[in-house]
Length: 55
Image (spheres, rainbow, N blue to C red):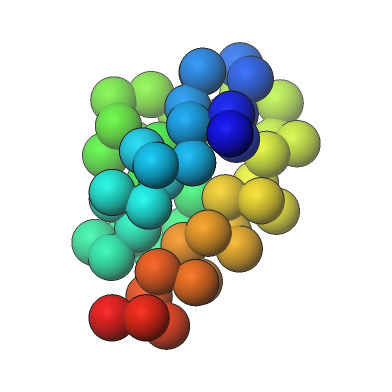
């Protein structure tokens, strides 16, 4: 699933960096980009929270 259309970031990419990040902005930075329109931040936050809870 595509989470961020602006940066073409997929769910598996967010999950891959989620345990070393606390915010969507940190996750995007770890992936070499930055949030643009911000519409994906809620979905990205949910993915990060899920991965951190599972750790």
